[in-house]
Image (cartoon, rainbow, N blue to C red; front, side, top):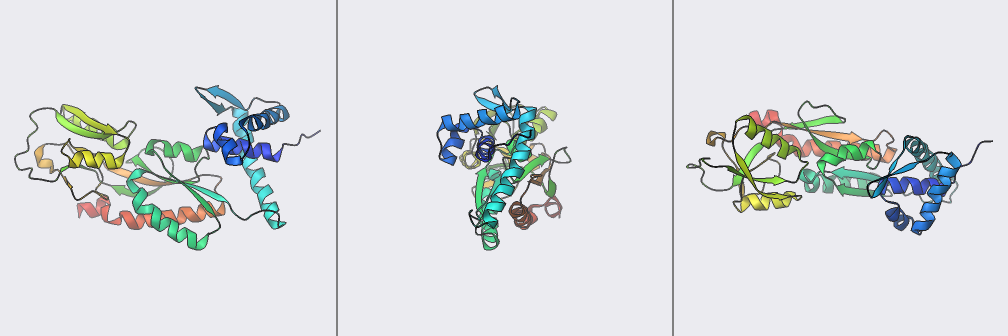
Length: 298
């Protein structure tokens, strides 16, 4: 006899995985944590398989859990579609968008404005993610659409939108007498960070010595520290504050590699998510056009 899976239990599983916690899922769904735990236990009993394993302080999907999660998303989507068609459900859905801090303020307002005109009934869950985690979030289905940064010509997922050069930046001022006779002071984003990794590799390749004067998980913090004269950092030229300038290569800082900007879309993207992806792609291309490697070279 075929066993029936409980719809609400499947929904709890999806929300728990997407939020990374069944405690958060309970709050999101308006249920107690014990009720959510019971629903997950019911799913495991129905499946006859262990769906989750303990990983650190949290839970991770087993192979069977990942398989059921894929079916759960399809089942819930069809269930909600049927409810809407029968007039007993709301036509509101959610699309999850992830952006790195580098592009958050520049891309988000225009993208949301255009998307709202076409899909004003869709709820958009926006996350300013750590760039290193955005690809994993899309692959795991926790994000529908994301813009992420990658090393040039590196392996990975996503469609290439732009290739941007990177530069060394320092406090605005006179660099005519700048010499690096001692260790180079650096202001860096917390690890893991693509710009941090590429900058340190470039310095090490030229046998430069360096010291980190400040680390921060905030891009605004990086710019503030550089503007205050704490040291130098490597980024793209996109949205650089007026208090900061490019340090000419003649002063000895080694060139750092270009980076790629890619658009990532989940394999289970809904029509609304695909529409948002198209808008994000266009807005990103328009925003970054002045900073492309070809334009910088010209």
